[in-house]
Length: 112
Image (cartoon, rainbow, N blue to C red; front, side):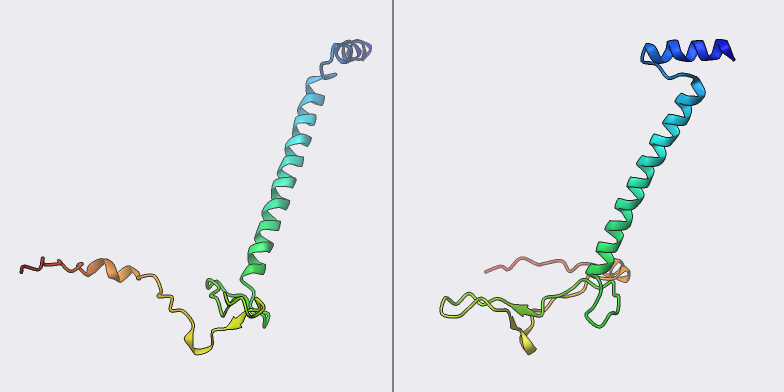
């Protein structure tokens, strides 16, 4: 025990860890702290993403939000968003997996 105490005081005096066990425990604590910070950041990002996909009624959806209003470019009016109403821009859905079986049409050149 006395020898261990002497060795540990000499090691700390040279800037080294007092023992291998203490060094391993320190590395484990640092690794746990890094993992904790990474988990917190991941949770925060997940919360922000979930908040983005929450509809005003409190319902969660995975659909991409579409614009329902536009800001007019007129200089005579204030830039207050106006609803599109029935004239909302059309945004087609992405083609499904079954579209891979359909051939693309071959465009024939026009001869004059």
